[in-house]
Image 1: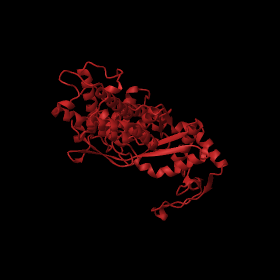
Image 2: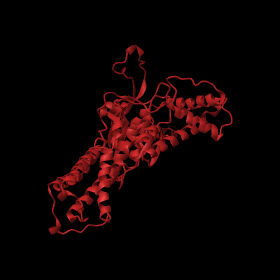
Image 3: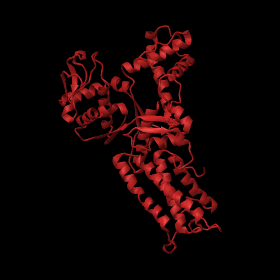
Image 4: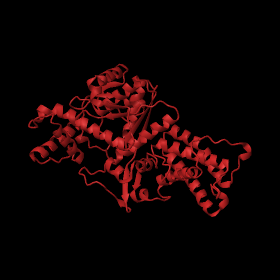
Amino acid sequence: MHVGHCRGAILGDSISNLLKFNGHDVTKEYYVNDYGNQIKNFVLSVYYRILEITEKKPFPYGKDFYPGDYIIDIANKIIKQKNIKSFKSYEKISKALSIMALDASIELIKSNLENLGVKHDNFVFESKLINDQLVNNTIKKLQSDKFIYKGKLLPPKGELSKDWKTRDQLLFASTKFGDDSDRALQKEDGTWTYFASDIAYHSNKIDRKFDILINILGADHSGYIKRIKAAVSAISQKQTNLVCKVSQLVKLFKNGKPFKMSKRKGDYVTVEDLVKEVGKDSVRFMMLNRSNDVELDFDFEKISEKSKDNPVFYVQYANARINSIFNTLNLNIDDRINIFSNDIFFNSHEIDILKKIAEWPRCIEVSELKLEPHRIPFYLYDLATLFHAYWNFGQKNKECRFVSEDKKINRSRLLLLQSLSLVIKNGMSILGVSSPKSM
């Protein structure tokens, strides 16, 4: 998995956490495109790497093959398993090699996701949808509903007409649901397009009684939204809501310059590299620190600082400082604090913090309504800023110190700190980030 995938995975996981926090039942699924030319080229890439390792044959670098070092890792794993005795003929071993290569790839993906703190409930394979006739059955249903017909498509905008082959093909009437064009369901060789398989997958989810579907899409799939929303409308008779969230690109910077940590061939930075460099908490918090629909600059200098400029550190340090106060008083921060009305007194700094705490339910409400978890790190950073400012003011003004010299604290202030810690822990939990008690 590369850094772009990483942002999408964290976005989807945090949306799931947010919905669960608000009491919804959520199922997280990873859709695997393991059918068609792309998977054939992937398996061939593994095969050629095996020949490179075992017979010193040069790898045929080309636009259709996968040159990344992870392919070498998969090839070595297959060789060590010794389930395939000879690699002389690709045709004879292609089926077994395809299964082993895909299994190794999924294992690698799951490992990358685990490093990010992401775990899916189901892995759904495109090949299974096709082999189980779900694509055929879905297409037949849409045909009976008059949403599929045979026709010709005009060349895409900007494409030279002389390079475009006009032919009769099976088309989905996507324009009936607001799309710009009707969409092809079969390739020239008669195999299903990705779109046909995607329609079947969404139909399967509707059959499983999911009332809201949420797709996390990469930056290059924003043009795909209209057609898949159209398909869901047709399948569900406009009864199922599909929401698509596009995860935009991530740019890595160090010393003010674009940065590539990995010298791996394949021209991308892996999730494994990134987590090793800065840790899971920093990766997750920073990936959510901007709206998903804008590009994100990931600055290694900033994330390494122990200062206000590093937002994940600043929020975690606030919780650690609060816990240090309870430790100083030999109190358990999770114990119930009983307080009476005549004990309640807050100064202006504490009132500012209370006002911010009171915004937490609204932050959660809007974040869920818009499926925008980036609002939470913004809120937590503002909350932490108020707390740290008050802490620093207390270093100069004894009356505003949380704990007096004789180790006493008024109960209203204690309750404020407990509430503040609870909000931070809940917010960080939604983001999938830890809230350490000491730093």
